Image 1 (cartoon, rainbow, N blue to C red):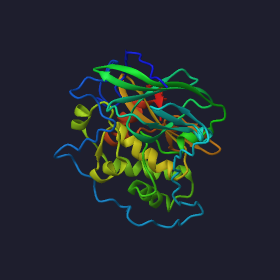
Image 2 (cartoon, one colour; image 1 turned 135 degrees about the vertical axis):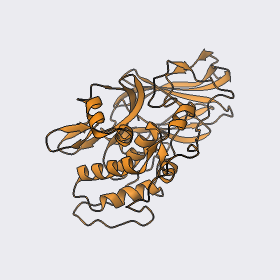
Image 3 (cartoon, helix red, strand yellow; image 1 turned 120 degrees about the vertical axis):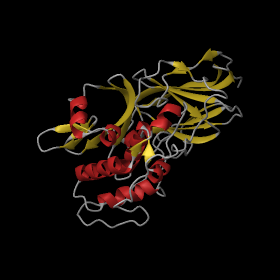
Amino acid sequence: MKKTVRLFPIFLTVFALSACQAPNPPISLDTSPGGSSASVKTQSSPGSSQAAAPSVGYDTLLASTTERDNTPVCLTPEAPGTQTAGNEYATIDYSNASEGYIMVNYLGSNHKVKLQITGPDAVTYTYNIVTGWAAFPLSAGSGNYEVSVCENIEGTRYSVAYKGTISCPDVAQFGPYLHPNQYVDYNGKCKVVTLAANIASSCKDDLEVVNGVYNYIIKHITYDYQKADTVKSGYLTNVDEILLSGTGICLDYSAVMTSMLRSQRIPTRLEVGYAGEVYHAWISIYITDVGWLNGIIQFNGKEWELVDPTFGASTNEKQLKSYIGDGSNYATKYIY
């Protein structure tokens, strides 16, 4: 099949480029020398505060002391090939779309490739991809998804290597929020998974697990302001590196917490959008018999409180409650 040569610039709001600071306007993805990479791993800033010695370990898995089973469940995205689309440049495997994700395999040799997915909600997600399989969530639920794989020509100009529409009529409600993906990347060997199980070992229900994980994170991870000022577009979190370094930006806090809760079978959404005028990342969770707690994961005995692990770690309780209020300061743009 002949590749469609369609030249166009790809734009998006930079995700976590200046995390928890003033939002950046939409800019070209190719703004830095050499452009953005598929996964830029940024080291913690020299002299940053390190995490205190954890009171709960992550090297040995503890058995539950309550009736709640704390055994980790790390679902693995697969590409069985029963339902596929694509051409010689890319393969889209949507065999497990009902589980809330698709797999994409770029087959070409271009070093700067973008994947764009537009769901039934008309929101377009733009990802960096490289050769090999990777999982991407179907955050908009059931419906048709337009998928485009675009190769860089120069600067911000890309050509469409593949474009097609796939039908996903029965996406599971919680599927996208129980599987790992590019932004929430973990597996059964990760320390964050063992840590989550150990925190959960003494918890009687999911709400206690959420509170335990949240309290651990805000006590053991400090905000890295230098990283926030220097992180590049395309940055992806290595959850174990953040746990071990004890520092991170808003995306790191949220990715670590999301990974921990998903591995404990608690549907969790990593959300990106605006907290007031700040471009930011936070989480929402689902609790059986309660429903989705949209950014609200802590109950003080009288009311649900919005919990954002970044603000929780860097702001005193009075200021946090004053800023968060009823959640109206938060406007979700993307969900991973």
